[in-house]
Image (cartoon, rainbow, N blue to C red; front, side):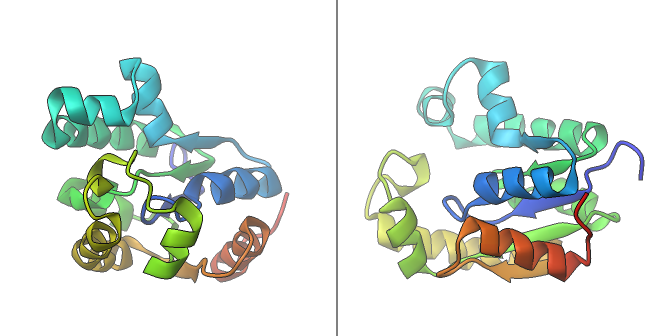
Length: 173
């Protein structure tokens, strides 16, 4: 599987993809990459600024391209932005032999972790309702893309990392 990630993490904003991804990479002895960070670095501005300046569809195009580049050029642990699974082409690439972990959480855990912070562009108005609606629209896409599902509710990043390693039957470096 040369050139492809060892593990890909998907899930909603605030679920801990970055924290768990870094821990997984460290424990597996591989590099870590985040497509949201790739976009911010390439564009020189935040995701929120891209949403405001150009709109969600422009951001989704940048995201699709960042995901494709990372899926073909990163061999470590890869975290995808929360909406990356909206693209059918991305889901097809994930289905083509990737080890995909869907990190899940319920709305109460989302509130506890993020405060459903209005700085997140898709949660600007009535964040709790918006988060529920996003999850209703996306949950089946995360599940479709996933090799395994790991619940994060009430768990530390270390516990989630261990659960992902166990679920994937991966040994630490």
